[in-house]
Length: 252
Ligand code: F6R
Image 1 (cartoon, rainbow, N blue to C red):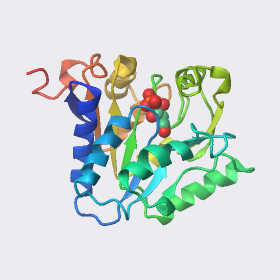
Image 2: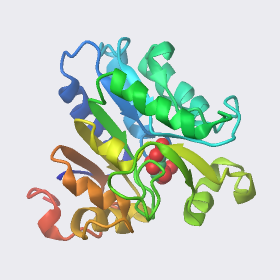
Image 3: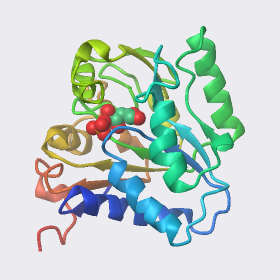
């Protein structure tokens, strides 16, 4: 895994946007995988600046990683709403090319299969943006998720419900307890992955993802199987990595 270090979250966002812009190059119609939550917000702000400066994503296709099950699409914290607010608008994406799992479907199992088929029909994901949960989840693949898992309905871990209560007025009782998420196997099929993490609360998960054994107990550790992963970290998120994992110029 390639690791890029920035002093703070804003810098990590700028660095991640640079990686993405350079990877996309002049590809006219890339397929992006997009995460929600706090982690990618500085990245989306930096990418939006690049869009203002001429980066054209109007023909990009995008697939969200996940969506809460049962939360109305128009709830401000549904990932449909978050993606519209933080991704589609600022990045100038065409809403008709942006997909989010149908968490309100009466048949979420069928919705999961449809989502996999849509990704396949788009030719797969060129570049997947990820955050990481404090418990090492990617997407909502909580501890226990196996590396060949596909898009499916999952139960959120109590830690994730507690962490995400900040988006629901601090009330864990308002956080949905199930989600539709791309699987680890789905994520690992993307051709390139950029994971952004910042803040001390991610330091342990980051260190175990990079340096620990590949284990379902820390689902992000399966990213070690992918040969094109860049982790863009701020100093706090990188603070528990051993110096052997850090870029040679880190700290100079
Ligand atoms: C969001 C997602 C999750 C988050 C993770 C970190 O689409 O798939 O894996 O990336 O829960 O959340 P934040 O960034 O809010 O700390």
